[in-house]
Image 1 (tube, rainbow, N blue to C red):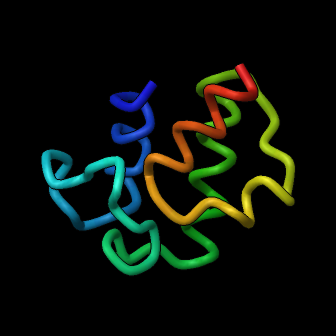
Image 2 (cartoon, helix red, strand yellow; image 1 turned 135 degrees about the horizontal axis):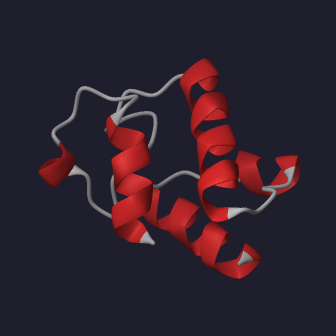
Image 3 (cartoon, one colour; image 1 turned 90 degrees about the vertical axis):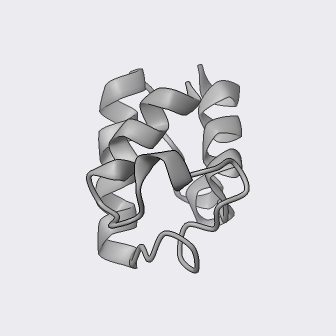
Length: 74
């Protein structure tokens, strides 16, 4: 799940894929903004056939948080 998540994140950030770690902060480390984050959520929902609730999405700060959220919803 981590690898697929990183693959999707890689389309929206200038950070090298190898440098994206579970502890990477989505905004501070990867440079995402609210528009790119919304697009990522949509891509993840489609890729994993899940629906990420808005309240869950707003609490996600790191790549690891994102993966954990996906795992809970799968």
